[in-house]
Image (cartoon, protein in one colour):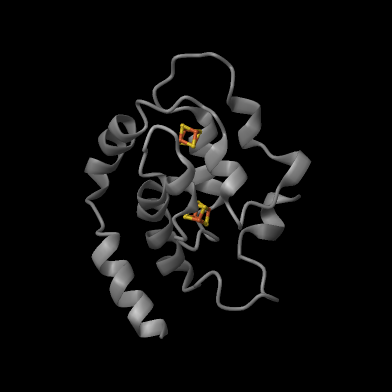
Length: 131
Ligand code: SF4
Ligand code: SF4
């Protein structure tokens, strides 16, 4: 089952060269309306009232790739399980799961960590984030 998941992940979340990532993120996030739905739907988002990403959305600014997303990309890099719920709820059809996984897969590979495999295990960055 784990092998099947890995094979599917490789097919669905093809990796891109580092130099192509920033232009891809900018273009893919250009239509974001900062509704926050992707955060609300995420099953591994765990900061609660202390969330840093929410400091940066709903500000009415015109940044095309907001700090909200940058903070989330970092916070979820070790813990995103690629469930697809953030993409499902996005009202403007941003492929937020693909964006997050393009960031998370290299991080999780380097950490040699697979989130979602053990409910009792905290992601490697968890303790760092809450300090
Ligand atoms: S794909 Fe990742 S970021 Fe999106 S809702 Fe699932 S766990 Fe959260
Ligand atoms: S759900 Fe879509 S529109 Fe709303 S904040 Fe997330 S990416 Fe932006």
